[in-house]
Length: 197
Image 1 (cartoon, rainbow, N blue to C red):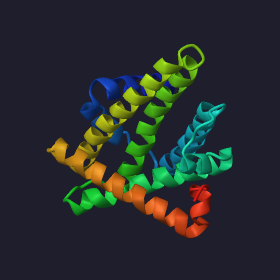
Image 2 (image 1 turned 30 degrees about the horizontal axis):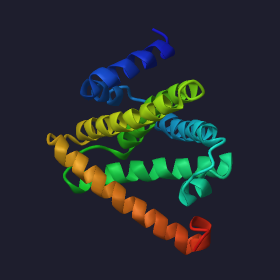
Image 3 (image 1 turned 60 degrees about the vertical axis):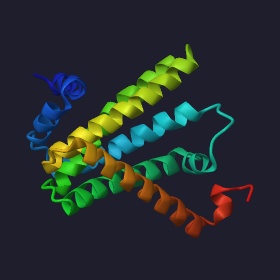
Image 4 (image 1 turned 90 degrees about the vertical axis):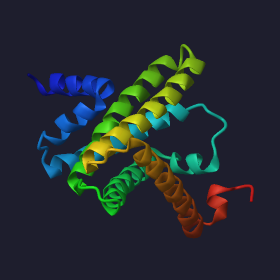
């Protein structure tokens, strides 16, 4: 079986049975170097698709406009966001008694970003024909991402209560987002993110 066929099969399994897909993925034994390279690659591709998606849009919140001002800046922020996600998934999970390793947290972040890239490409294809439907795809794909991430984190760390995993994800995400905004304001000044202030 070719690599492409294996990835396509794993992608299908991820959407149909994420728990089993997580087990298959974590048993693959992907080298750490490949996982790290994968993180950079998905960051680049995500930044490109995000830049294409916002082309022509007049209204963007200041933070998004700042992060997506250039493809290079978008890539840097995307890579930082994914890297922080890896650290949080590993460290917060460990703090609550989880058993997952940093390398495996890296692997699931890369793989789920690959899945989301598929949805982003679908959005781009639909956008010229049906912008409203494209927006719906974005909303549904975000909900699917949260569901997949919850299941994969639970499998990574050996957690049983997925509801608690989801709650921890939300609280951690809100706290991390708040700290990010505060950090950017301290480093760049409020005018960079809130030009009307």
